[in-house]
Length: 197
Length: 332
Image 1 (tube, helix red, strand yellow):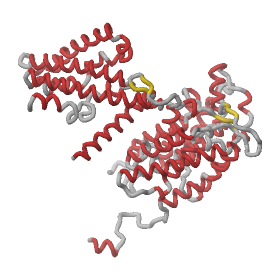
Image 2 (cartoon, rainbow over the protein chains, first blue to last red):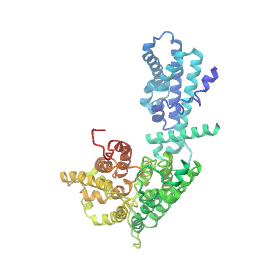
Image 3 (tube, chains in turn orange, green):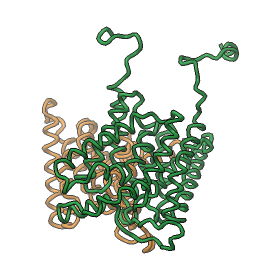
Image 4 (tube, chains in turn blue, cyan):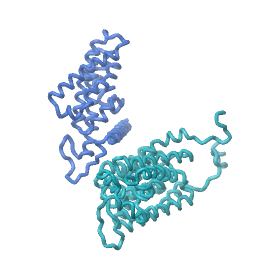
């Protein structure tokens, strides 16, 4: 597969959230607003690209028997970088995402790409894969966060969309709303794919 | 094979059909709800009637649109969507704004029923799903109660607290049950108290339930286990500390217990099929209801209790399978 192909597969066809249903814990937990979704997505993308690069470079060196702990150490290092940077430069976002930033370490998307792709491929394809998967993840979180924020708070990226008479459907920014919105978006995607074929 | 099928009625047992159909059952349930609806309109006036009509029409329309979109035959004539609509309205405050009622109808049919595959496939009671979604999303509108103003009394609606809500507030503030709530039990029985449209009159609901029991559409198991466990558990707390905890009669007559036990918890689709399973289901509902009422954040727990037990229904059915006739335990 070409580099462009490796990049593009993460956007829709193998989208981590909506096609592989991986990394659902952060997806459902932090997408109470479009902004939180974007922040989480960018943080994950950075870790994903970084860990894919390092895992791909070290793939000849890491003994197969201890590869998972080795991957986790690499991922955790990048997560620490993200966490400290966020605390320093985006403190509000850091507070909003809270415990879910350190929990990026155990995001299945990242370990999944390290195990399934980066540890078996050369540097450039691994980078393209990580970038594509990360941007796909970010898009998914942004869309989910936007839908939940729109109905749950009546705003989009903090700006009021509906008139002042709008009564927000509070459930959408509560945990059950995450599952309902996720299911409905998934249904829409499946419908779109089925129609296109 | 097809020729034989036309000449002989081939199916697995049982071969004797009671003659009941979905349409007949649904129609009987609708008839049985007439007294409760009438009492609601008497006590709460035209606003209650409006909510009833809006919810029913909303459910029917949503069901028709859903089925049309999915390319399925439109089955709104079977009455199941109408019942969902009426039950939803009975679970809403009489002062519900129109958008709240319509949104509830859409949620009940789309999220509560059609996404699972329509009638017979939904794991949760659709009307209760809608009620709980609305209760969580719009706490202000869903807990704005009005005191009953019987037709002809000339009163507009006066907002006030339900008996259960008043009890919870008083206990939170003072640790003691308010004295005046213990009186007025006859009024509670007749339905002269603030509350959801359909839950106020135990008398009217029991009349309807008696008709359903007579028609054998209801069996006694779930309501009896539900009410019995509520009486038992709330009685226990009452005996220990009557100054703080309300009496079992108060528990029975206030809130949505009668409506829940006879109409919401007996939905054929979302409850266990075996008699032992029904007893467990009802007892679980009662237990959760009392726990939520006495110790939960919400004053009323019937709808949450029934939904939680709906979730447990497949498990109950799995563990309490009726013994196959002629098979002895342990011999396979």
